[in-house]
Image (cartoon, rainbow, N blue to C red; front, side):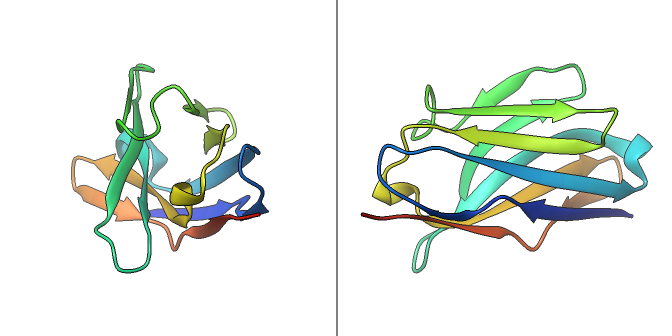
Length: 115
């Protein structure tokens, strides 16, 4: 199994920045890729970004050019740098780890963008 713990969420003004972190533990060697999803109240869960073990990245259309996903394998930590935040970015952000046995997801960290 893989355990994931997110941190770094909070309240930020429009145009501001936040960096989310996701610490992974457990069967780290089974991870193929990691990523972020988000879910706002009353809305469907939305893909944000993913990064493979080789470093290839992919972003959702709504965050392309504003968000950057990265990982520090030495620290077993996934990051999401979020810039130029908008009110519509307000959501619960959760990280996930894809393995050959399945996908694991953390509890999430709340991001609120408001003036």
